[in-house]
Length: 218
Figure 1 (cartoon, rainbow, N blue to C red):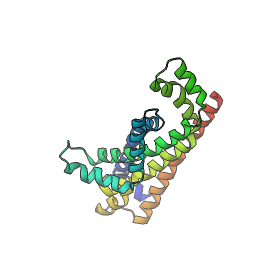
Figure 2 (spheres, rainbow, N blue to C red):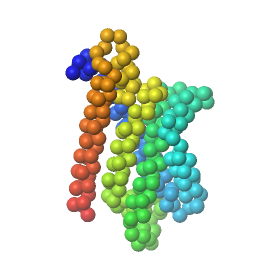
Figure 3 (cartoon, helix red, strand yellow):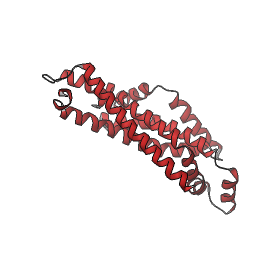
């Protein structure tokens, strides 16, 4: 247990940054994913084209290269300075948004076409048709795959460790570099793995609660 109690400050910083990257990236991915998912089913050809191009380019690019662009390429563009933590959130959020968009698009396709047509028949514009009629039903049908996307996002936060973000993936190196800190590399990795298992179990519990709640609501 010395590896934990002898490094409480490092564990606290690592867990905090991991959660910041997860929640920040998750909120960005969800918001952007909803917009892109709606664009993918839009009746406007330009919107569909832009949505398809975004998903095709970003989803087919390795996450590590996306991090390279934001953490190393962004500062070289002379744009306003951001911390590596914020750049990491942007990288993982923009990348994960493509998966959120595709999951939502699959959910949208499960909603009967007649419901959207009825909403348009009473004069609702596309935005209101999506937000009031289609998306609420689509979200109910995609809870398991959507949660899988966010579980993958949680585990992908470890990529940020390679770009100077002090999160759980970087904890082994951080403890090793700190003079006099207890803990072998393998012991640290095992504890980090256990933390991720606990976090994933929490997300799985949330998934089960949402499925039960929305199943009753139907």
